[in-house]
Length: 339
Image (cartoon, rainbow, N blue to C red):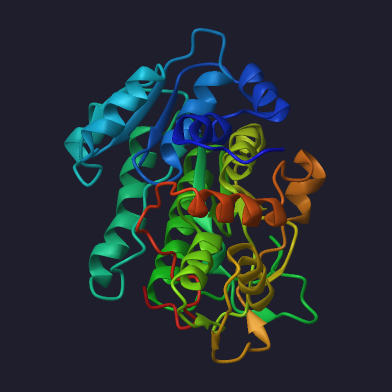
């Protein structure tokens, strides 16, 4: 498969539904609302849901939307935009009562400097949303950061049944968000799917882009977190939307990531080959890393359509061709949970 050569083609690829997404949205009735749709993954998820819905379903995208160009783009895709602050209970009360809710709101970066705001965003807002949409079916994005660092050599990554072990304030608030959804799911019978994601990537941002930019700039590549999982963003969104049918009370938990455990040293060296540049490193790999075992999702939905090796080649071609990059580093190398 050839690499996307411009943003029009990239956006089309990122929003392409899988057969499983078509099947999921075909059996679920009613309109779909995406809360926190203005982030990195939200717009393409909205468009994917739009492309997979042929039954008159309305797709609503809710966020503060500070970028008017993004609003215009969403509208051009047939998505209804609602601008507002989800910290505002009165605003939440005005939202359309959709039977399908995708929850993507959260605070990560800045959580160490503003921990109280992170707790409010990641636990209080979900509570208000659950109270308002208590009759709906939920898909909530969570994170693999709720797991502890695990052995690279022996673990294969954390599974859905493993004990949680959040490292740092941000990860603790993410466990809090899961517990809020679990509480209201049990209290009111709300069907919920929780997606624990590590790490969505595309050509403009992501773990692989972070490494590629360091190599291209001739900066030492940090080996503090020596291993990672990544998944093509379109595959992450597709697996999440397909998992709407799995929603249950108590919540159904699903890890979403690529099947490979990538060694950061090897990824950097591959970018060095593609850029024809030498590569240097900072530090040494630890014996543990934040790793997510997504075998269960792959058994249900198949392998991701785009492998990590394919993404690396596409990202290199994109950067060499002068493609747009977002200045949104993932800080995946952080080991102490301070974001």
